[in-house]
Image (cartoon, rainbow, N blue to C red; front, side):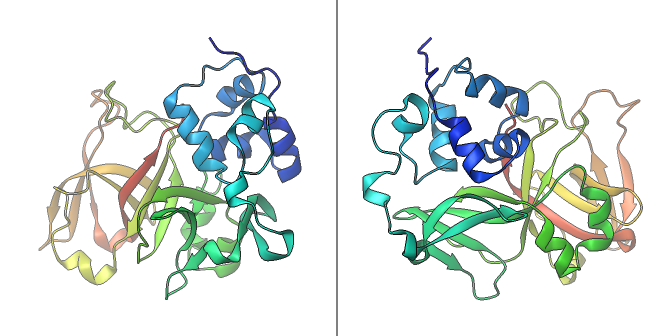
Length: 268
């Protein structure tokens, strides 16, 4: 295995003033995995290399991993008086981007940062496991939403609508296949407007859904059936243990928000 003991991950993390857990989330890995990365013990394959480059597009990969060359990529370096921080919540940042590569949609729902021509980081609000309880009453509170950390996914175009990211907990959506949604994964979904709930959901196009239920909290499931006339959803878990994770129904009258999942950031 190629070694990279003389890396600069901790240098970058300390400059960003984020915790190990927050830095790991930016990379899209578990905190335990980041602990091995910063020690140079975790094998860096193509998938991890891509994660690192996507997370820190302005930072020279060789400098970060091997302490070689300049810190900034020459082609992306900008003067300090022409840049702004990409915020991840609580005044913390993943780095600097020129204002010229920062875009916001017309409704100010989504922020995009151009990484390269036709390739963008889209910033969403992340509802962590600890924040889920507060989200039920706080999703319409701008102050609460401002305090949530950010999550980033890579897209190739500007997307309209409201997008939100949620941290997955538990093993109800795990079936041992690549289709599993694992504990610690982050799913990003697009909000379905309430007036569209009167039509059948596109379950053939979107496999996973996030339902914000007034009494059950944040639920991440498959929708196996949508009774449009009665306003009832049948929700399905991937886990084969149907004693522990049986299918169940909910009424849309008890639901505040529904998101169709468009991205899953795997927690390695």
